[in-house]
Image 1: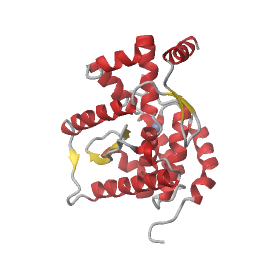
Image 2 (image 1 turned 120 degrees about the vertical axis):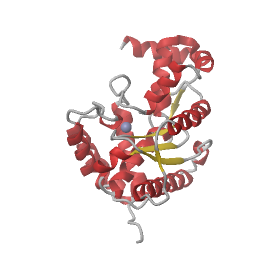
Image 3 (image 1 turned 135 degrees about the horizontal axis):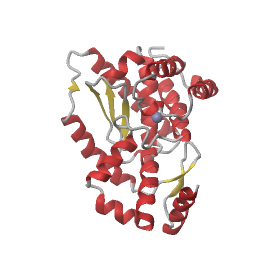
Image 4 (image 1 turned 120 degrees about the horizontal axis):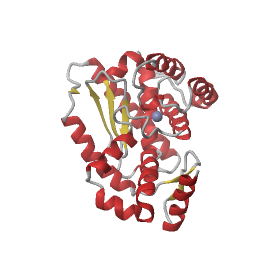
Length: 270
Ligand SMILES: [Zn+2]
């Protein structure tokens, strides 16, 4: 509580950083320049891809599927932002989607649209529509500046009113790079810095809408999160299975969002 108050005062003192998201309507404290985070993403994405095995699309059905779903989600997001006169919010986005060989059941999207799906996620998604719902979820974290929010809190707590100076001076340091990776959901470090409950629900909610617009059934989200939960027992949970929201609450919320998502659903080829 005291820490939250401190962060709030810092935000007020610096006179900037609070903004209301045009889509979710939620007021957020984003103290770091999004363009800087997007630049960090370009370099961190490259580093990640060069130190992991990327599954190439030539002759690999899974990689083709991840690519196809990614492209359809991106098209849906572009269409939605265009329809709502928000195209400027996607400035700086240079979307990329890669499948990476790893037993970890994980996926993430960095600021600026750099997406990775781990092969270990595919036995849980089981079908293309469920994969679309996860990828929609991850893309939403990027679109709504959740990485920025998470990093802002940590940097504000560490550096007080000099947040921006401290960030600019330290953005290539190992500490800041690690914070970035954690804030993206890279690795299974949910215990350290989890997405908040509000962020998770926003990601679920709009993830279903992007999936629906992309031609994938949003109802697949239900079974997907149930399989995720079952698989998580005893394993290190990925970011989307942080303690927020708890499993029952999550399904309840997904059901609540479903009628809205179904309005956007137009099956592929119909
Ligand atoms: Zn999430």
